[in-house]
Length: 254
Image (cartoon, rainbow, N blue to C red; front, side, top):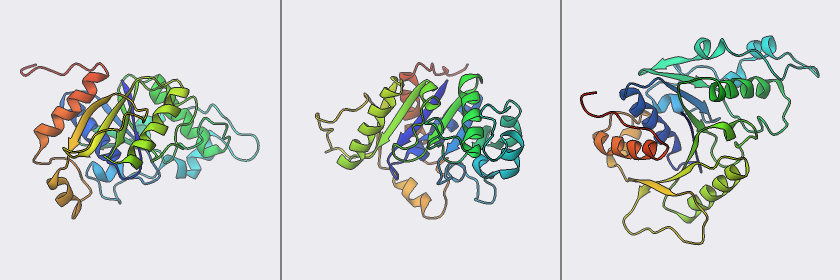
């Protein structure tokens, strides 16, 4: 199954993507994590230092020239089958690919970096059998036609604020226009006195994440969001989200 995680900047989408990948890995699944955000924060969220994070695919000029070419005549369907394992970095049992932004990759952009990026992402989504978690660019610009619309589901993350929910609504509506109908809303840092306005069009609310003091304390000294004291709560949230998309959790003893 392939899931994309989207939301306004700062709402915790990268944190949730990391939690989902870690949860599935501990469930015994083969998981590929795709950082498609220019912020390049998924690797650090998984525990890597910035020196350990692979160079984004979109910045690998020699590889781009080799596979796509340069100038006016470029190959829009480059060979990419060998690239996932060549470019991936093993992180806690997961395979991490850092791609950079996918903004415009599918909306008619013919530049060489986006041609290779789009081809590799399409290969992973359409042809691979592994679990795939894609951490998207913040906001709505990343929803390139013909690529992300092929994932099995979209997790839209918001904070309990009108601004966050309006962005979440824009993401949801645009994704539906692209054909991505299976969507789930997750509210992060949810307080007990917040209610979602009925006049904002949103995906079904599948899970809420409470404020985690340990996460705030961790972020003061480390970018890693894993191995928090509230692991049981986090696992329950991840299980609820994945179950919504049809994942059957392993029973104890299996």
